[in-house]
Length: 266
Image 1 (tube, rainbow, N blue to C red):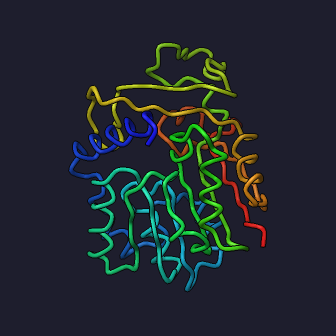
Image 2: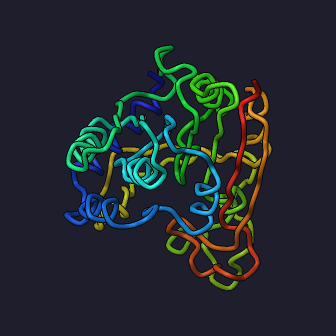
């Protein structure tokens, strides 16, 4: 396992170990009572137009499992399999699947290390916000994802818009409230390291183990898919944030989030 991935594993497990009491506490209730909880309105539209009934669905970087559980139940899938590097998050997700009695299984692994027992297993794959940035080599990432998809399988990616990686968030040293749209970082290539933790999980500030993530422009994301037999079938851009850094730019005509749709060539 590469050193940066090893470091990210330790940092994610530390964050989950120190999670706020509320983090994940609503999964069972919401999955039981709501339609497609934990997805935004535009992602729900895409999922409703995707045939998941009786199918096997997968999620690469599944976090605490809430999105995959939501999709399997609301989309009436036969089975769900999620992959994530953090062992304690995966254990938590499997516990929630048992509580809900949902046919989901979560596997603790580095995505790059997924073995051939999962090749050509999935009819539908989802990737959600905050997944792609943890991988330095997206071509290698999509090579694994594609191998796990059946010929003709669908893939849906709902991510932060790559343009936002060139902007600064409030609280960053280079942030300028008078010039919020000024590019402060390279859109094309940037390695980030930090020890500020994962506030959205812990709800507290702490000095964490080191997280390392990477900027990927649209060309690298689409290129990684196309090089690995995934044909782009849809692309939508939205002017609202689905992360935690750019709420103040919502509705101002700035691309903040994106949905890619694709299909593996038969």
